[in-house]
Image 1 (cartoon, rainbow, N blue to C red):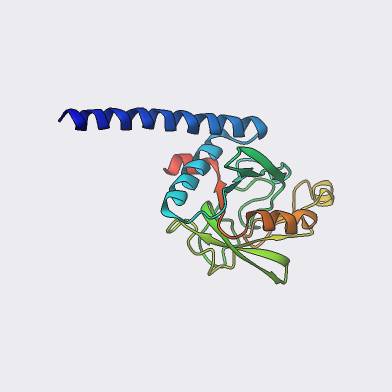
Image 2: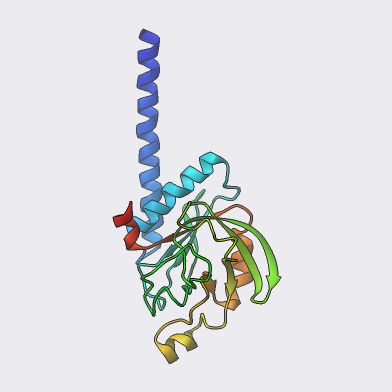
Length: 209
């Protein structure tokens, strides 16, 4: 009985230290990412940790898309979770039926031309109609698990540019894919391919969960 009590105390202390380390990590990441909603990063890290425990994570990289921000903002944040360092901050387009400058509607359905929310695991790359592209596997049933069937991928797109913002007051929009500017697409995709996590967040998630 005494041994069980001691083991229980040690586990409790370890849990407290683990929680403190997680809070420190989250705080350090937020400090580098001005404008990112704290709720978005918290939800993304929670999903990352769960997927890591399941063995789905092969690279300690977490990309957070904050759809609570307009398309004109740099709302894609790519972190090295091992070091807590912000690697990239970029603009990212949403689906044409998700909204104008601000994304408001999301779907898991084929043909919806909307973005999907939740956690995705990155897979392999290929070169297709949109150039160098990254396959994504949705991990959340009824939320984004049709990503592969819908051909939701990350790719570069000409309409993710300062010119689009100047001419239209927003980025151009995709068919549901998280499109990024072509100049950075190859390097960014290579950094996050093959087993990292992308988490797409919107304030509506806080109400739904």
